Image (tube, rainbow, N blue to C red; front, top):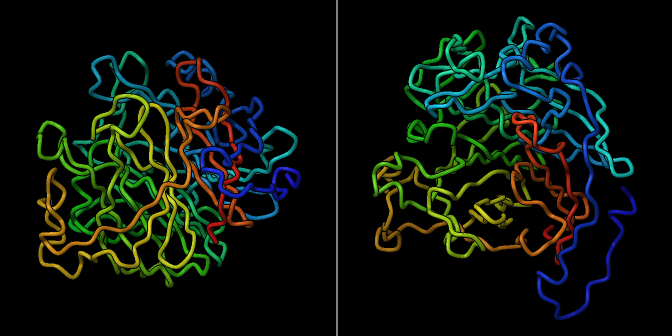
Length: 417
């Protein structure tokens, strides 16, 4: 790890593509799923193979990433192994009692070495599931044939990013409802924040304080990005994709996602302090053909002040963007800020008096031969302010063809903080 973080001499006048460098690639060795979820029985794991999960020792640790310092990381799983039903109208969950988990690991040699796992729990200590919460979301089924539906779970979380609070608690964002979640040091959920007007009936506390516009997120495209300031007082959360149905051309062509800023000084009484629109890149700037609906924000990390890094993905690669909200219009101050007319394609924001956050490309992954760009979903900035850790989500090897979870260290051509 120390060798990977050694300072590299950068030649003057070199372009970003020439000086960005992959310092190392680290893979998770074969890891029994029980290492992440000790409450699972051998019989359940065996049954999951029959239900359509052929490989049970390639778990994903990379739905989100947070750097702990000294070469140690906090990763997080999503809802667990799942796949598309034959008719694409639901998902099958071959291990329905899988619990989304916080995973602590370090880098050693070329390996991601698992130190411990902390499954998320309700207030009574019962492990939660990753199953959908409400009717209208993707219907869950028990196996690949998708004949036996599973019960919905109001407690279920599809976790997509994570941050460690200064007090030792954990902040998470998830896609199901979508939500911002706070858990204590033991992994017990103390509060879940959802969009206004949403009622869950969960077994732990839920408050509907997030802007109601987030309820229009697309299925399986909820809150994917979380950046927490170093003092733990401010959080930015960002949707993965534009809102609204892709069947409507006005939304299908949209290239903005919603971002929310919160004061989380008191984790149990968070307050929304900002609502913004964040622009995506032009899909034509990627090396493969893409449509607006293909653009995704998949990870975030805090840099300084009101600056965050966002990992943007599309077919053919990913970009890391430095996004600055300092001069952006706070839509909470507008009467139309929670209206979806601002999210439609072709809006002239300047004519409406709306300033979008500034953004600058700091990395394009397709320019780095060692950086596999298929499913990058976790991002962290290391203590030198110049090295990124980027981790992938291998979907728990649901088809049996996916490789292990991998983390890459990438040296940027400039120091960001």
